[in-house]
Amino acid sequence: MTSSAQRRIAVIGGGISGLAAAHRLRELLPSAQVTLFEASDHLGGVLQTVERNGYLIERSADMFTTREPWALDLCQRIGLADELINTDPRYRRAFIVHHGRLVPVPEGFTLMSPAKVWPVLRTPLLSPLGKLRLAWEYFVPGKKDDADESLSSFALRRFGREAFERLIQPLIGGIYTADPDLLSMQATLQQFVQFEKKHGSLIRAVRTTPTKAKGKSKESGARYGQFLAPKLGMSQLVNAIAARLPPGSIQLNTRVERIERTTTDAAANWCLFLAGSPAPLVFDDLIIAAPAYACPPLLERISPQLAGLVKSIPHAGCSVVVLGYPREQIKHPLDGFGFVAPRVERRKIIAGSMASVKFDGRAPDGRVLFRVFVGGALQPELNELDDAGLERLVRGELRELIGVSGEPDFCQINRWLGVMPQYHVGHLELVAKIDTLAESIEHFALAGNAYHGVGVPFCVRSGELAAERIASVER
Image 1 (cartoon, helix red, strand yellow):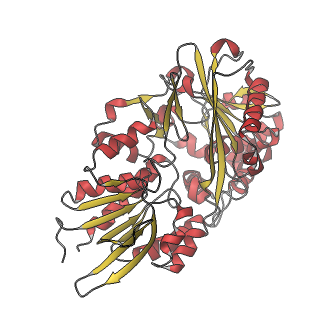
Image 2 (cartoon, rainbow, N blue to C red; image 1 turned 90 degrees about the horizontal axis):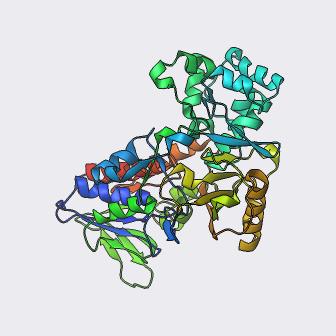
Image 3 (tube, rainbow, N blue to C red; image 1 turned 30 degrees about the vertical axis):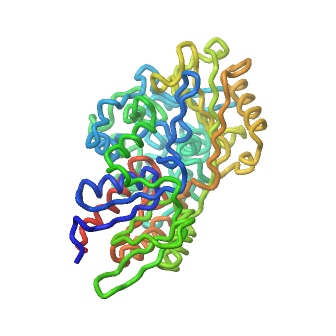
């Protein structure tokens, strides 16, 4: 039996899931030899912060929620908690594009939770009939079975078409950039499924929730008070985790080409064959935290069935177009954090974020930083535009929607094509099969954003659970 001091553990993938796994292993098995392999030249996966002429630019996610505690808990354990900043409380609201102009999300309306009546009754986003149908949700019978259903099916059944198209689809589409006809309620918005099951109505669920849970916030769109970001950007989180790992334990620009399992009289071992290296490296335990789309070739020799299931998880792509402008070139008062565009508006963008309004330190004084999202599952063809075409498209949308004029200080285009896992109806059943197969393989674990949640907290939790599984098994 290998002692803890001799135990060799490999983690494949240097994104936030792999980093969280490696860090948790160090906490649980401090004397083990943990090696993290990353194929690219940087850690963090899609989490990348770039500084440019006084702007702090996030190439993908720019914050994480505290509703799920795992990312905040990790920050506290690595000494980063004092470096976290809140969203600006003055502007905690969002807008929805309505007939070509930005209209505030009704106060207290969060995704599918109309916590306040009067703001919904007064909003121009819905017609009188649309408001009546939304209010009728209180009397709509609950679903009788536990079968999964799509976002569109659930929202249309409970709130009607107008509320779905004008409120619910854009708000949730701004988070998942997914096809609402395919997006699984059970896998992504299970709390609303539980509201219906327990209370029979989402409105009734909100009305019967204790006052403290309801809150008296004037936020709309998302619970922005629940979001945090490192002062220096998301890369600060990545770097803080990496700094806690022993020197030499991180191997960048190191691609694992294949994995084999060998068995001797003493024990079974994992053999990792690296690109450009004829001899394999041998480990006692293995965590694969690479993106799901990159996993099948690695899994093929371990379990062809597992490789096939992981390969069946669909992915979509999105482009994040980041621009900086002088404040005087923008007509809109910028009194909110961002806006979403309903599918029925037929805009060429999914959503836009006023990143420097949301968090301090994202733009120089007198400047504004925008992040605009294009493509997604509903408009994949827009990702095929070249950089000049994407910039023209986004600048045109910003000009029409918020009155941006003139030349930007810069335009940076970040393409994330085919890397965003899609949680379609039936996702939980698929992942249950993946979990069962993965758990049947000794000294092995999977982690990543394709299984149990796509946000940063879920990725942290996935990596840490993988590490805990490995640490719980004696070698």
